Amino acid sequence: MAYLYLPRNHQPDDSNPQWMNKADNAWQLTSATLVGLQSVPGLVILYGSIVKKKWALNSALMALYAFAAVLVCWVGWGYQLSFGDTLVPFLGKTNIDALEQKFLMSQAFVGKFSNASMVYFQFVFAAITLILIAGALLGRMNFIAWMLFVPLWLTFSYTVGAFSIWCPQGWLFRMGVIDYSGGFVIHLSSGVAGFTAAYWVGPRAPRDRERFPPNNILLMLAGAGILWMGWTGFNGGDPYVASLDASLAVLNTHVCAAMSLLTWLMLDILFYEKPSVIGATQGMITGLVCITPAAGVVQGWAAVLMGLMSGSIPWFSMMFLHKKMWFLKQVDDTMAVFHTHAVAGTLGAILAGVLANPRLSRIYYMIDDWPKYIGLAYGIQSGKYNAGLRQLGVQLIGIGFVFIWNVVSTSVICLLIRIVVPLRMTEEEVSEGDNAVHGEEAYALWGDGEKFDNSKLQLVHEIEEPQMSKSGYGL
Image (cartoon, rainbow, N blue to C red; front, side, top):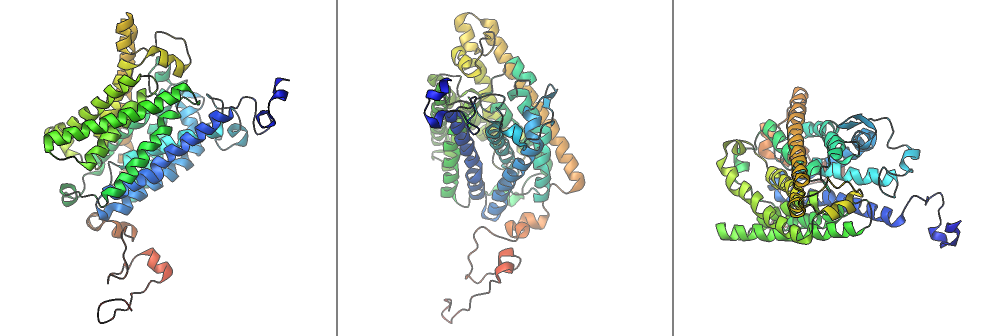
């Protein structure tokens, strides 16, 4: 047999079956871990530092809880609803236990690696989607209500989008929608769902909304940096193979993000005469979001163009339209998730339908179905107008479906939760913040004459007040 001539470490055995490619499996696990790091600690740090000091712990814990809760739900039923056998054209069956050894050690539905790697990879995408939604709700959502929201939204909203768009049996996948790595499934979904949930939860206290100083901008930049670099796995892992396409997707991702950041920064300087650090961070995020649905199917010049547009159009929607449109002003979207994810995600989805290169699309989708996956620009260039228009039409159908489904499903979930527990914190909790909600504070400096009477840390370790000398220094 041919494999007898391979080095011993490359010969098939029980831990390395013939269908598995070690390099692809290693890259898939690495990519998944990079995406996981975007959430924990990336967004945990970013959320905890960009909000007011009194909401630092609550914001960070919302992200940390979502990450843990999604994993348990994902292996229990979420993965099979998203990628299992067809139940209906937009949802799978839960007929296989995602923790069953036989299933986990068999080949995934795509790629040369195991189901265990695929379940892990898809989990981190589901988790970050819920954490992005949390960004719209920081500073007033009842934590118990959030604990209920996460598994319900994962089950009844995320799985529908994932199956429809990413599963080979999904109705939008069969139509030929281009969503390279989550422009629809993750960013448009989280932006719309976050905005919808923010409507039902209601706004923050007026004093929190009017004056919103971050408690640590430098730490916020650390979280943003982890988020940016983690996008290497976010877009680089979605070809499900360590390939040329993965390399192109990674480079396009960073080029678009850099161009978007620079564009946003220049607009801040031109209109407000000051380069904003928070603005630069927002520009980075919109660039990363915009390129996501098209990362590996567009050329480098298209990534630059997408960066210019993602740094300007979401900037305009956030800085101008938001202040002019009555409805947008009524909804308190704490982290502007609607603009950075819904607007930028929609922009990326449309541009994917315009700028998708047919040859790159074939490399990614590994098919020779020429009427599909042709961007409008290339359709016009090659005389295949109908194919280009069809692709743009499919993208618009996908946008409409994701938008409507998330508005409806998120509204129903919020209304059901409201029957059981309040969606909002009490007025006392909204006023006091972390100490009232969790009995802890982010910046707890013992020895300054203050004592946190309800802190669990104090109860466990019996922390006592320090004795003070006459000079005021601790003895």
